[in-house]
Image 1 (cartoon, rainbow, N blue to C red):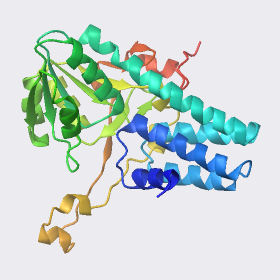
Image 2 (image 1 turned 120 degrees about the horizontal axis):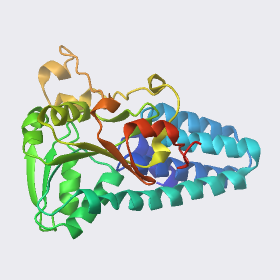
Image 3 (image 1 turned 135 degrees about the vertical axis):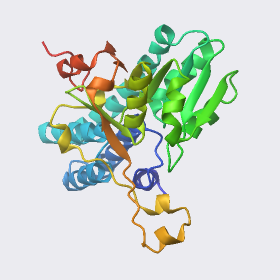
Length: 293
């Protein structure tokens, strides 16, 4: 399998590690396609359509698709390649910048609750694990994939304490934590964001018990339009059936919605690559990381 097919398979099967990585994977697919096809934009347009349709909730993918099509319209294949390389480089640097917020917000002895997996989140928690003594990480499973376990596995060699909770016990987990951090798959100008299902119940639980909820993201995930434009991805029902005969036989319909939106009112602040932003400040930022004057 060549690299292009490998990336297509990973995106289609949802095995790319997080929203930031989805954006970089999309950029690499576009880069490889243009390197193969030159200035012919037919395949580029088909690819960008496929990327957005396959990952409708990932606004980093939308950003990449827009950048590529704008570059193709304004120049040639070389310009598209340059834009994609720049996006990948900037995304990698942005994740490192986001991680710096761990130093100011996660102190010695902190009990930090997280849900699911994202590249920005694992970078931040890794930095915290390296620099913060007596740290405890609490996590909810994030079914059906249980992505939270991937972060635990990545950090298991650090001298941390881990506490795992079922998704249904999110309020119990929040009551045992000092703060919660989550990744972001889509950031909206109204200060809301989309992330893996289970994030909204986590946010409500944090609000109920009175602990802060921080969302960790690159501003390249910002979508300036109506949040309703961004569909919340539905994954195959088979991922939830788990061999249950009534579900396998379709006597029971399983709804496997993979993302949901958390409103701005439940977000304490965003930890971004351009600084800490309150939800009300998101509308004044562009997806290229500049502030609107």
